[in-house]
Image (cartoon, rainbow, N blue to C red; front, side, top):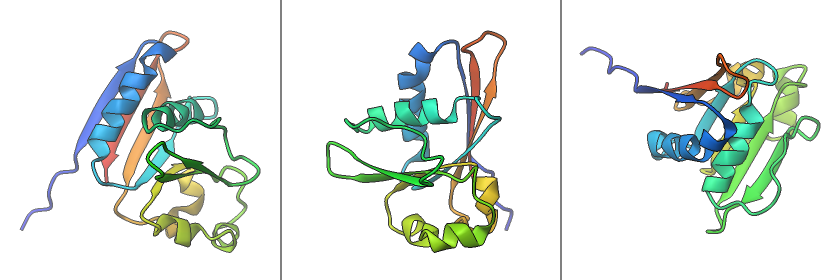
Length: 148
């Protein structure tokens, strides 16, 4: 039996004003998936896009990169928890294990993960990969989404 083709979609945004619509499209695209992997160069807009996703989900508190804490927890207006990870400063996978990454990943809550390649061996295979690239104009971005 042939493998099913991976679902994918690409969004082009011209300015940050387009982010709420892009976030809504991502949430529609992921369906029931809970592990979202964000890849992109430094300053490509991963955290900015995650802020827009959290806003779409009804998070009222400030959303910021958990660069030093590794994980931030947000609560939506419906009481749903969202975990936002930034593994940029992780030295090895053991460090992620020590902070309980596997428990977070298996919690059933939405996990938004920046720099997932740093912990690739720990990630569930049932994830959505989001790649963000800079476009021609200053705020333009190309967001590619793919169900793994």
